[in-house]
Structure formats: C-alpha cells, structure tokens
Length: 100
Image 1: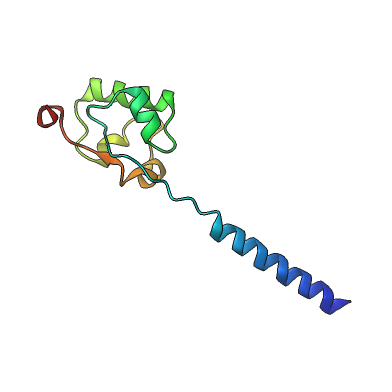
Image 2: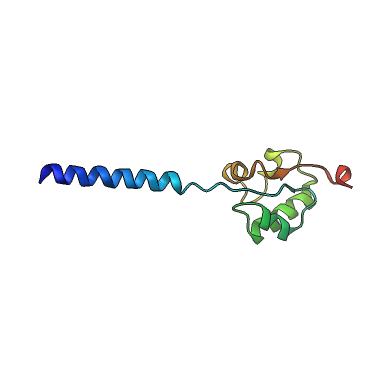
C-alpha cells in the first residue's frame, strides 16, 4: 500500500510539472509605439494593459511628454516591471517627431 501511494504521488508530480511546462504561453505581439498609439491600440497590443491602463499611458504622455524608455513608462499608474517584462519585445519608444 505504501509503495502504491508513493507511485501515485510521483505520477501526480510528473503530471503537474508537465502541465506547467506545456501551459507556458508565449505572448507574440505587434510592435506598438507608446508615444503615438491610441488607447485602443495600446490595450489590444500590450499584455496586461486594458482600457484604463491604456488611458493612463496616454494621460502620462500628454502630461509629461514622450516616453524615452521603460523607466519613463513605469511612472504611469498601473504600469510596473512585470508589465514591461511581459511586453518588452512589443514596446517601442520612438518620439512623435521622428515617427512623422
């Protein structure tokens, strides 16, 4: 009985580890320029950014000017290191003047 229980626990652990490995989701994205994009574009393109955070990004941009880097963007309400890490391959910081 003891060995049967040990085997069941081992198999449960294998199943859990396999589930974690296969459940890893890779967020693919289209690049988005946080200095020119509208709220709906930001919310659609960035993982973890919905309409409220997208509006906060625009407000921060309007109040403080263009974002030069991730540190500038993290000054926005609701945008922290985790959001930046999840979206680092998607976010562009091209200034409005260069984008035109």
